[in-house]
Length: 165
Length: 252
Image (tube, each protein chain N blue to C red):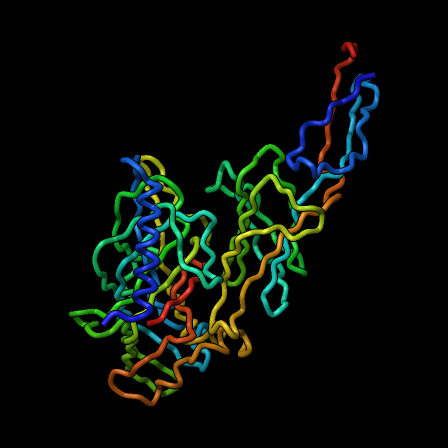
């Protein structure tokens, strides 16, 4: 029986608990699925009034392709959005949130060293209007979460009939 | 007379220039960086229903003159945060020489108006600053901004001229919009954009009255009974943006 070697994770000391490392025996046409808990990034976007930026557009840019969106999505009703960065891509990830003609951008350096649940230090370009005393700012917070997408990573193993195992 | 705001702004630019020179070293590869400006459809088409002013006026503009100087693109690490009480510290920067008086109403495709271009060292220009200065000559002389147009509500039709006379400066972070901007590559072309949000001045009838923008915007009513050239104060208002991105305003 072969044991699958886990690829190096991007988070260094933040390596998540592996739910399953052992692959089942490789059989003809067998599909092996491994589910692991991986660290992800949880984004919370709201106005400083406390109102969540619900259904706001989120655009994620990778460090190596900062001009091309890597992922586009929407926040939920509470202004939340979650994603799992590509493990090997270290550098600055940029997340842009836009709604109703206003937007803000947050920059996230990888790899992260913050512990679970801690808000990740990030630069936020505030968007808003009016006097500072009554400005409606966009406030974004990023935090590391574990088990964010517990079944995010799947490994499929295919074997043709009679192939040596 | 040089004002405190001017000194702050010029000091920030000078400091950034020194840092940028130190970082730049010898001759570098370069691309082209073009600067645009626009006031969106509210400038070129006006406040047309349902996008009337917060107090129900329809506005059409013959001209919206703006006069700018020291238009400067910066590379900043970490990225400049316009929400903080800080100045821009750049590792690289380029500045358009001269003073530009431009009419936001004359914007071309998508309302954009090309200001000028220059050769720029490679990199991501993720901050933009400029000064709003007094025009020394021409139709906009002695003004920083000059709105000329007609306001209509019901049977009323009022020609107006609103003049902003107080110089100020904008310090902005990265352009925010449909695409990221400011990436200058070898022999490539990149652009940046100054965006004026006129609804922050006149408000919008198609947004709730308690919308933060409408709570702050004076609307058109304060000028409806005036005649001739009326003074307009932009204190407390943030008209200048980079796309949808916010800017810090420095006043004299």
